[in-house]
Length: 142
Image 1 (cartoon, rainbow, N blue to C red):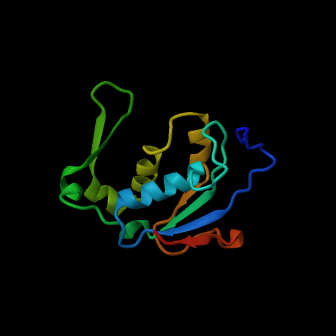
Image 2 (cartoon, one colour):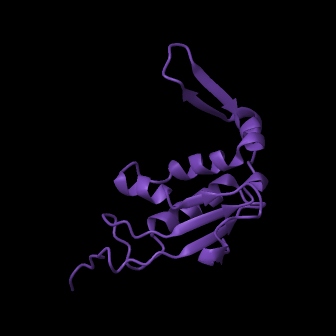
């Protein structure tokens, strides 16, 4: 039996819709990462970009368990001396919940050319309305 090698012309990309309301941040990020990589497909190959497109709605209704809203912190550095910026996840979830979801999914995707390309197929929306109705995304239950 020979190993299956997917070709670029054979790869089909579906659109999936994930409703994040009432789900934890990790659950949503894991499901999105699996769909973006294409690991749910029987034709998955780690060297090929065979993943699907993902739309996440209701990012503002994601749940963080425990004391993560008060204790978990997102850090970034501007590049200048002494300019380390810290933001608690409580304020991050109020101001930019889409960014928190993107950051969680990015941490579960490999830092390669394929991973960066897969992240371009992720769309995250704060509310229930999204711009991908024309693609007819399949609602996923997880």
